[in-house]
Length: 264
Image (cartoon, rainbow, N blue to C red; front, top):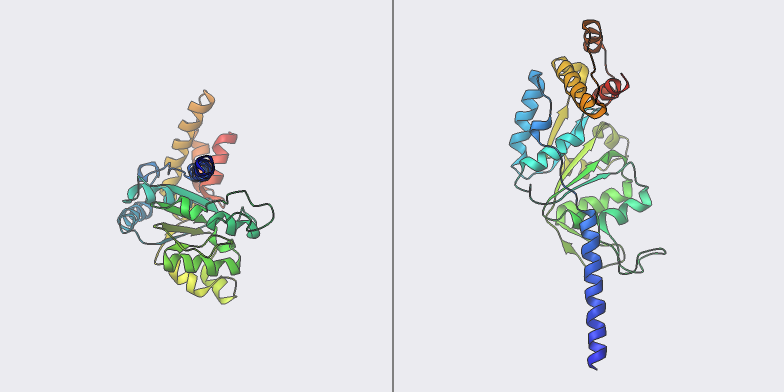
């Protein structure tokens, strides 16, 4: 009887250890703060002030902006400026994960929930982000059916793993981002209206680089210094090149600017 009980205890602790390992792998830390954001344009400075205010409020935030404007950078900064700074920061790109896999990644699953599931089950990223922030990037690409489960999670502050009937309470702040107009997707029936209003409690809009021209040259200098240190060579910037960089439209925004400096 003693050996049987000891064996049962060992199995229980092995499952707990496995669960903790999965949790540790999933936990990430926010890398960037407001100080890492280059903001010389008056519009950018106003945005930083707004972000600093809402970061402390612990409310859901929706970041709107074209591709390459730095939405994830702001998500990191919101977390690091909030009272959850000591908690985990978990980033999820909803467009990078197949729809049938995204549900199990976000909410986890129980052992035997489906063919190929890991023995002992797996915690979801919402559980991994407990006490911190989860960043749902490209939320517009989330499957319509999955949106209803996300809405329930946000409303009830709990998750239910796939294959389970148990509700697991969570304390997670949600920061979402999109480069598409969710209002248009709602009208076309591709995004749930109730979820849209739930995640856009406090929307912020990051302007494209062409609409905050005063940030261009400071960003150029920032990336030049970065690549000079990385490549260990000097990068000169002529007046002609400076004017060309300033007057260019930058459809790819900061990402395109960074790639341009690296290519040079």
